Every structure is written in C-alpha cells, then in structure tokens.
Length: 456
Ligand code: EPZ
Image 1 (cartoon, rainbow, N blue to C red):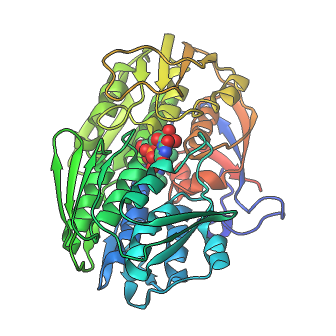
Image 2: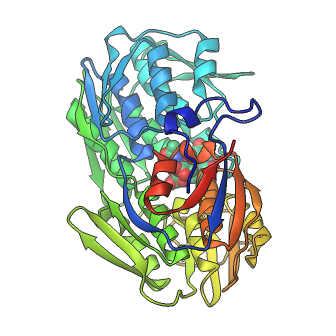
C-alpha cells in the first residue's frame, strides 16, 4: 500500500534536511503494469517558453508538463516582467509586453538547477540590449561547458563579460547575422543560435547543427512567430533575420525521454505498460534497440504498448546525436540489460560522465564494468570525442534492494527501475531531482502498480 504525499505536498519542506517527498522506500520484484500518459517534452517546452520573449504578442504553449524545470523558466520569465498564467491542463499563456531588465541577484535567485537560463541571452539582447546569465545548474553528467554558446553569441556581435557569479552580455550595436559552424552538434548551442538569429539583422548560416525532433519543434514554434528558417540535409540551417515576431500557439512535441524511460521499466520488470501520447516516428532508433533487447511493442493511434517478447537479449549500443540512440535513453536501458542473458555494451559518446550511476547498480547486485576508453567505430556519425566511456554489462544478475542517492535526472529514474526490479526493499534519496523532469512521478508509479512509500 503506498502512503502517498500529493505531488504539491511532496514538493514542500520535509524534516528540514530534505524537501518533503525526497525519500522513498520501494519494495521491488513485481512487474509494472498499467497506463502512463506523457505530456509535452521537457526539452522543448522550456525552450519554447524562452522563445515567447521574442514575440510582440501573447504566446500560448500547450501540453506543458508540471515539472520544476518549467517552474524555473516560468519564474525567470516573470522576473523579467513577462506575465505567465497556466491552466490545469498544462496550457501556458506568456505575455512579454512588460518585459524589462532584472537585477542580477534576482535572476541568480531564480535560476535554480537548470541549464535553460543560458538560452535567455539572444532574446534579452534583442529586447533590452543586455543580459546577465548566472552560472548554470543542470545534471552532473559532465562539466557541461558553454563555450559553443558564447562563441556563437560573439559571432552575432555580443560583448561577453565573465563575472564571478555568471556572465554579462551586451549588444551596443544590436545583433547581426553570422556564419557559425558548431564543433559538435550541440542541442543547446543550436537552440542558442536559433533564438538569436531570428531577430538578428541579416542572414545566419549554422553548420553542424543538432537536428533532434525537439530542435525541429522549436523551429516550428519560431516559424509560427514569423521567423524564416530553412533546413538543409547535412545539418545546415539558414535563418533570415526579421524585424518583428509575434506570439505563437503551439502544442509541444511529446517527451521522447519519458517514453523511453517507461518502456525500459516494462522491459526490466517484465511488465506491460501503455504509454499514451508516444509516437513511433520520433522513437524509431529506440524501438529498434528495444526490439533487439527482447522487447515487444505495439504502436497504436494514441500511444505505444511496451512489454517483453520473451527472454531479454544482450545488445551493443552507442549513444549518438539524432537520429542515433539518445544519450538520455541509455541509463534506463542499462537497468534492463542487467537482466539479459549475456554481455551487453553501452558506449556513451555524448557526455563524459554519464555512466557513473552504474556503481549503485553494482551495489544492488549488477555486474557492470565501465571502461574509460570509448570503442573505435570508424563509421561514426560525429567525430570521435576524447570524452567517451563504455559500460560492459554481464547478466542476468538478480538485483537486491539497497539504499541509494539520486545523482542526476535519468540516473535517478534508473535507480527507481532497478529498485522495482530488485527483490526486497530499497530506500532512494534525493528523489526531487527525478521530479524535475517527470511530471506527477509518484502518481505514475502508483498507476503502474509500484509498491512504495514516501518516507521523507
Ligand atoms: C540537452 O542538453 C538536453 N537538455 C539533455 O537532456 C540531452 O542529454 C542533451 O541535450 C543531448 O541530447 C536540455 O535540453 C535541457 P548538448 P545540452 O549541448 O543542450 C558538449 C535530460 O536528461 N558541449 O547537446 O546541454 C557537452 O558538454 C538532459 O533531459 C560543449 O562542449 O546538450 C556535451 O558533451 C540531460 N560546449 C555535448 O556537447 C558547449 O558549449 C552535448 O551537449 C555545449 C555543449
């Protein structure tokens, strides 16, 4: 029986040392069965909210998940004078009419543990001629530099000044179009260029751009606002700057990362989960790997059903930029691979420290060895990067309960799947990080029959 705090109560303060709802105990060993509904993508909705700053009129964003990453962006927008109101169904209305500068300490106080503030640069420079961006938060899965962002902004004519608490930018002569080639198809840097180029004077050519579905959805948002953006086959994007943009009305693309997370939960626990709102087109690579790992899925009009087809099978997966296997998908998948008969390899090529979470899985009985060297693969889509790691997972290994602390968003979710797969009881702390990216997380665990209590 779950003793369940309401999501809102769970976000309050608990015993003082952790926010309430930050510690849960899980009794595992039973398949997860039920229906989960995914809303709009965390990694689109937060960016589309920033894009509203560029419009002269109100923007409406639909299917926005109720997660703290969205709350952080909302409060940053409000600090800058944007009025934001939200309906219970996840529709946000953002009115940039009152947009104004904000005091640095106020911005700092609202930036939270998020990376999105860096995307305010372009819109604020267009609007106010200046911007202050505090040091960024975000998941500790690597050192998360922003050099691609700052170099791009300088190309547009921004003056970038590093301060002890963040960066101050100014654009005394406005921003002009630029020719930019990204050293790596960075999602954030591509969004930085898009959000800056649409109102710059002249044309911008971006090469080696990220082309994730969330990026294409942001381009759709900007086009609705009046932007002129074209996309060429080989990661080249052209943006013709325009003088004025208006508000948009947009329904966010579904959250691919959440779909993959719950699919892996079904795989690991031998469960059966229907994910409403999931679409096949944007999940093709994931579905191929899911099938090769012994999964079964059925694509329906309103979502995708996920369960095992039979015994789990070992796989070799290399994370990559789109249309490759997303780095955000490898952590939940690894938990399922601990239950497969044989040896799997997961080669993480996007972040330098996104396999650290496997230590706790070994603590629960898994057999995972992480090698610092990546695997040589000559036909790789993007140049080999010096920061690569490969996890070798040998299974099947029965998992047993343990006490673990959530390290990052997807790693934390993976610990919950591992605890639900394990025999016995686990205690998971720092669960608030998971709720940053998974809306109504406790309600969803209950919906699929998880046996857990919120204890702290
Ligand atoms: C976005 O992060 C997502 N976050 C991440 O999802 C996702 O894993 C990542 O894209 C890759 O798809 C959001 O959208 C909020 P990157 P981002 O810039 O934009 C290096 C989740 O779980 N890099 O594509 O920060 C960087 O260090 C999160 O929802 C530079 O070197 O990712 C990394 O190694 C986790 N310099 C690689 O590029 C830069 O200036 C890819 O980063 C920028 C990035």
